[in-house]
Structure formats: C-alpha cells, structure tokens
Image (cartoon, rainbow, N blue to C red):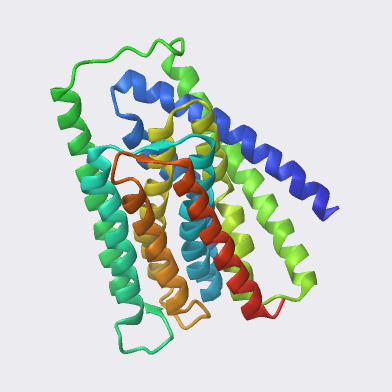
Length: 318
C-alpha cells in the first residue's frame, strides 16, 4: 500500500504545483512584479514549506540529521536534479540581474552556513548554534529587502509589457489558486515523505542517508513540479527564481528557525555534503554566465547529481 500512496501523493504534488504556478504568474502580472522575484519569493518560499515543517520538527524532536540533512540534500537536489532537468526540457534564461545579485547571494549563504556550522574548529562535526541561526535569519531579511527594492527600481525604469499569452485572471481566483495549490502541495508532500521513510526503513538504511536523499528529494517535489510546470509554459525565469529562492530560504530561514528551536549540533552531515551544496550553487552562475543554461549544461548538472547519489549509496554499502 505504501507504493500506491507514494504514486497518489506524487500526482497531488504535480497538480498542486501547476495550480500554484498559474496563480503566482497571474499575481505577478497584476502587481507588475517580475517573474524571477515572484518565483524566488512567493513560489520559492511557498514550495519550501515542506522543508520548513520537516526540519523544524526534526529540531524539536532532537533529530539533527533530519533537520540539517533535509536542507543540504534539498539544495543539492534543487540545483543539480531539478534545475538540470528543467534546463534539459527548456534552456533556462539567466538575466544580468540574476548574475549580479541572486546567484552570487545563493553562493554566499551556502558558504556562510558551512563556515558557521564548522567554524574550522569542530573537526568533521557540524554545529549550528542559536547565534549562527540569528545570523542566517538576518541574511534572509536582507535578501527579501534587496529583492523587492531591486525589482521596484527595475519596474520603474522599464516600459510596461502586456502579456498576450494568457488571458488575465481575477485577483481572487489567482489568490485561491496559490493558496489551494500550496495546501495540495504540502499535504501531498507530507504523505510522500511518510511513505518514503517507511519504505526506506524497511531497506535498513540510516537516518542521515534517509534525510539527505529520500526526505530531501521528497520535500523538494514541490520545487520539481513547480519548475517543470513553469518550464513547460516557457516561463524559465520563474523556474530559476523558484530554485534560487527556495535554496536561499532553506539555508537562511529554515536552518535559522530550526536552530532557534534547538541548536543543531553533531549529526552525520559532513563537510563533503556541504561542499557539494556549494558547488551546486556555483554551477548555475558558471553555466548561465552567457545568459542561458543550455540543455548540455542541464545534462551535466543532472549527471553530477547522479554521481553524488552513487557516492552516498556506496557510503551506505548499498
């Protein structure tokens, strides 16, 4: 029965993501907010709610591997797996604004969280204290402030563009789609993770492996579905914004909040896992330097994800 519920949950996640993207784009058009910012802030944060719930619960219950591994694994899967697949479907546009701020900021917070976690004094054991978490929360507020300010300046200096591809939707309908889509996403994701963990436990793998693979990928299903839906609609800016915004939110807000619940000390998430997360953050900037992440670059990122997964399986002796 777990496998059947796994498939049903996946279908719910895909349906919810498509509804969420449709509503978010409609709101962006009405409020004259760019696709990237609506993807990075509204869709990015919205689709990261499952990670928030899982990591906060893990911190509350003292399961450090789940709290931290969920974020690190999700960020790796978001870029290497999801963005890689998205670029394979449709080459993803990268604007100069992305290259100047959002992508470098994502790299910056990825490096900062590793420095805060290890401090180069803790050996191979991570420890994110409440003070470290407070620093991450300040970075989250800074990201929101700068993103909306830059978008407002860009909107004021750019001529208004009419979107003729889709008929305008009433604001109430767009809001209903966003809220309804999020609800379906969260419920579907929750059931997916629950059944995935049950299946994995039967296979006899440990908590750290489950958190950085199955739970991380499961809680990232909303990002996967939202990004694929956006790519199919040729809205690659929203797809990129969803991934980058989600990763920044995961590090700054989710780890920040989780560490306030309980300091995230110890655990089985190593410097190698953090390093892979940083490399994953660098690749979109490197591949998108000329304005687009090509299908070849997408394939390369996805192969990196496959290689990392094989490494984790070998470490488990699978």
